[in-house]
Length: 303
Image (tube, rainbow, N blue to C red):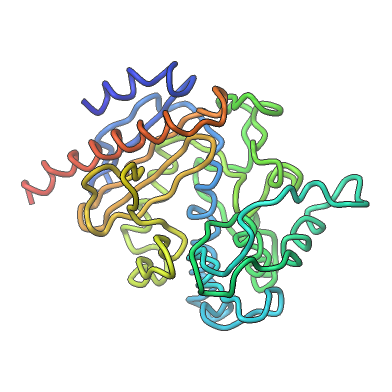
């Protein structure tokens, strides 16, 4: 059933699809493994959230105290939980009076953007919030994020990536990230489904610091970087495990995992090549990730 869903969706929901399911650290399903995709907002959890927790663990980044780069009252925890009150998105590559903005121009523009609600008051998913978080990470880490973090099989851009239909092939689809040279806290990573799954597996294996606090929610559905199941068409499926954590990306990517089941499920696509209407990819994610949880059943009964 799970493979048939992918087979029936390819060429209809997206020009191409790839997927990986791991249980107990072992690959249970691998579909079109060689394909590389623009991971979009999976960058937020694969790179930026891990960096934030690493720096918090060694005392360089305080999760619950303000930082001079942020608006007063905003904390790293709120930025991770998308409850800091930041504007969700803006065309930061279009800065009045600046012909070709630099990476620093874009980040500074994001940091100066007024909050749309009081910190901690409500949940609002925000790319600008993660740009602010990335700025703080680079300030306390002393280097750009691509120097602070790397992972096997994941890269900032990739010449052989599946085309998205917007801009040059192998270059990040997100225009803010593109204007930043393809390295941004909210988008920019490319990779295969297995490479993403193996990186997510590190969260299950306890290789990311502060993992025991990762599922603490803020004012909405987001925990520390990761999202939790919500809504009738949650990308986690109809009946996810109670500890499910995941994230999606605009280009048509998604990843969910459960520590109790030891399962990671990654679905990648270039659905934006068919346009921006999210209805078809939402339905596919809901159905496919819902089926993916069942692959943990043999391992669970055997244990």
